[in-house]
Image (tube, rainbow, N blue to C red; front, side, top):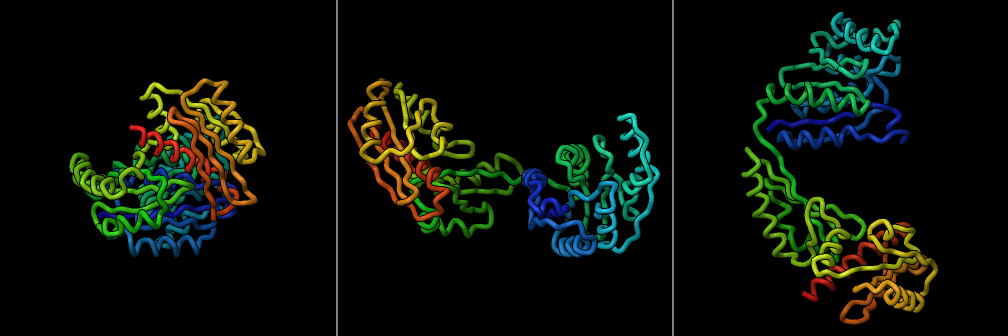
Length: 375
């Protein structure tokens, strides 16, 4: 199995000045190629530390991808670091310099001496054209590894990855597998309880099964590696069937499904309408449902009266009210359906700032469960 590691380079990432989106993009594309991604790491602009990280990755993985540090300034260390990692000197490449000159000339400018740094690469490296930036890329091949250095600018990195690097990897490593992902979404059951019900599935090697907890929602990821998509789909379907059988109604959707979309689809299927009221949620329910009003500071009794008033004026089939109480770490819910009035009180043990989103998720799941009971 072909393996890879990603090293993002830049002190600005470590300082929190910019967010690394390159790793996610590369990881998703490697998944589609059937490449096993072992590890990702971010290193500041230090030649020795970058070289150490590259050597460490080379000891484990076939492919080592670096992003960033290919600019023209003295704090762009990737070229020198890769050379140190593979035990080579850097060399000036006229063909790469011509690329730099050509790119800069498009802007009506003449390159300066500083920019010549971008035409230096480890000796023997394969030059890779960067058609939208001034930083040429390169590949260093060893007996086992391919060390590939790409720009840090996302749109440059993505273009080079798709135009040059992916075709190179497919040929170099004879990539003929895919990794396909299916994500099931659950609500109403905590991560620990879900783990108890599917723990044996989490020990599988192919497909693999993993959990990821969010605020009020737990995702179950099923990943299958196969020769083709139909084979991967069949492998995933077998595990998905077992998960759904064990978790039943706690699974509300998959992949791009959301709680709010699931609820709205269920309501629309019945030909019903929905209105909602939120209190102390900061507008997050307002952003999820089409007919929502805000009325902060409502007590539980005031919430119920407000929902009754909204139900009367809106003439909807279902009216939902949700109020969060950060001081008490609790939330109150009140709902009117064609079957009457319902209340629901929940307490919360997590960070107070997450209470509004948690309350919203549990309220939507409460509505979802209520609709299912009406079937």
